[in-house]
Image 1 (cartoon, rainbow, N blue to C red):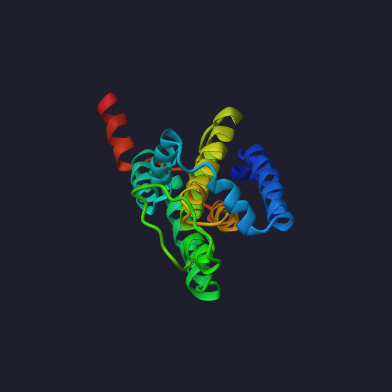
Image 2: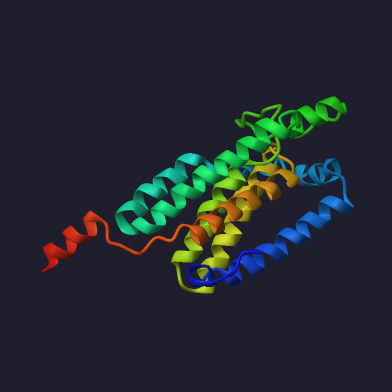
Amino acid sequence: MLSLKGELVRPKYFLAAYWVSLCILTALCFVFSKSDIHLTSNQWIGNPPVDQFFKMITLAGDGTVAFVLVAVLAVWRPRFAIWLLASIVLSTLLLWLFKYGFFSSNLRPCAWFSKECTSLKLVPGVKVHSLNSFPSGHATTVFGYCSLLVVMFTGNGIRLALLLFAWLVAYSRVHLSLHFLEDILAGSFLGVLSTLLCVHFLKIKDFRSPFQRFTNHSGN
């Protein structure tokens, strides 16, 4: 496990809460089959407010959001923009290695249950896929940038809110029958691990962006 020194001291409560929740959810995957877990979750489909909520929040796991955040941080906190960009590159390489390499034949829920002759309730307007289920790219993305944000922000309340937000975005992939629980757990781990590695090993001194220097000069 990485040593929590310097920048990594800040998110220790976030990480503690994350590891606990990850272990509990992973235990569920060992106790129950992924089919049973998914069918239990699938019972929530059909509640319009809930379905709409998860259709909206799942967008936060799109890679575009992460790159927009990189652009914002490049103006506001350049050091964190570099860390996040490096995390995106690393997590994407790891994701592709597993998703399109080792586990390229893993079926997504709709294909899995179609093979078992079991029908799923689906959220209207959501396009489902068949292959490349493991791990979840959306979970990787949201946990990657949330892990970086907790390094920036002070206050454990904000950090735990970011953890809850990340889990909601990740779970939206299960609710929409785009992934299994095990897929989002693996994705979350890739996102957190990539960010921790980048923050730990990329020794970047804090510096001001050209925009910050310009605004400071204008203020004077």
